Length: 187
Image (spheres, rainbow, N blue to C red):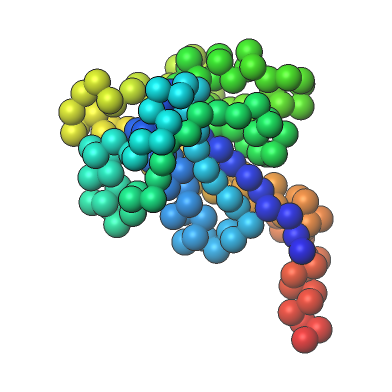
């Protein structure tokens, strides 16, 4: 069975930005039929561990037909450096924290700012790609967070699609069917 491509979104408490990113990406992967893409989220702290998503984040997601009622905040675990292929930092402090905690070069290479996939800021320094914490603000701050994450989703989806094709030995523009396509043509 082909392997999964595992992504994790990371913010501070895992109740606002990272669960929004997780659920938005999960919805996009479903829509694009990228069934091998698996996304989850965590916080750099345990402050909110075990708590549900912030009601304002839930309200924004619900307004876009994305359910968030199953989310429970959790703290980052070091073994996820090994078990995740892409680690998405939501703000510059998370990016710095993850880079400092990374045990090796391979782990460092997996860490990206989520907005590095947003064409509007992809060429900027990572320090200019952060998404401020909406927790301190109101509903408009959650709208802003939604919009900033949303701008990055297509780039992340395309990155994951390319990585899965690369793993399968199927490159963009190639006429060679991947293993899944070959199996379907035989049966």
